[in-house]
Length: 121
Image (cartoon, rainbow, N blue to C red):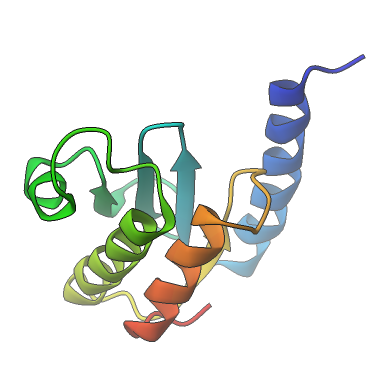
């Protein structure tokens, strides 16, 4: 019997295989109880092009201090920020890698905010 984490990682592996075949940059999301992290990785997976998270000091100040990074409002802020950074790095189109997490709640809020800010996926 697989644990909950092993199941999530198995789903993530299957998704990454399909994304690698597309040959586009990858927007990957990692979620913890306190924070949400977003990273844009190059097509070949060798370079990190942009990162954003609620653990960054400037974003934490906007959110109102420690412990405020685990909600959908914070995820929306991270989505906008990662889209701005990705566009500054020259990336317009990405594949969304939710790392096996359900497309719901904070993950969905981040994705929607990134789309609204101009990223295509």
